[in-house]
Image 1 (cartoon, rainbow, N blue to C red):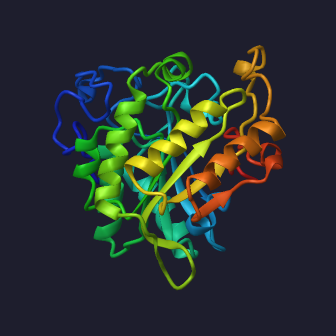
Image 2: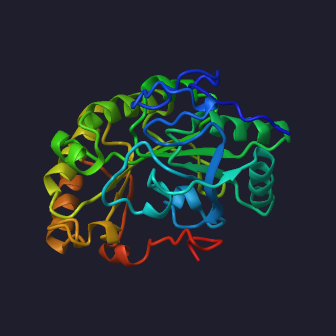
Length: 310
């Protein structure tokens, strides 16, 4: 059996400080912290996904590993079926995970993406190292909510080729209200600075047009929160670079958990969308992707199915 390396971000079994929650529990003993995750591989789905940014999915798709649970508990989570920390988590052996990933890579997927990996850094490292031992070296994409310790990001510089963070908030009160993380703006900016230090502002593209190395920052526009979105874009332009690739997403849709909410209970409007787009252009961003407003009808995975995107 291939062992899963557990513990802190350096892989040693000890009190968990992998993410900014720094719960300090020893997960290998069965203790649970904020994410209520153990020390094994808790994976909700491994599948081929063609719905990421064009430079990530390409024509062949990416092999995405969706971890269960999350170190943020956003009220409006678009993947709430698997990300709620009070939901059951399915354990998988490292052998089974590597076997499934290897099959998708051998069938043509050039990259592997880890989705919601902030609380599963040692497990991610175990998968990547096991793949490398078989001679496979796919492009590794780190698809995160950006609530990450910069020390943790520094520790995976040898593993990650492309960072794909979602920069959610510059508003402390909004971050607390919706995701239980008052310090999100400072934490995310520090993590993004470390990602930018590693990768710079340009994407290195391969022959097939997909990214082999780099940083792409995502931002999901929330209904009623255009000022937050504009502040996020300003922070990227002023503190990092307007030359970065940005993926501005309009795909928000109200989950059942927030159907009652006075503003989360609806989709974004054309006026809100155009206001954020105007700020994107004013700041000089010219690299990246902007979703069509109608995208909220398209990106709705169902993780009760064998393939959540089909």
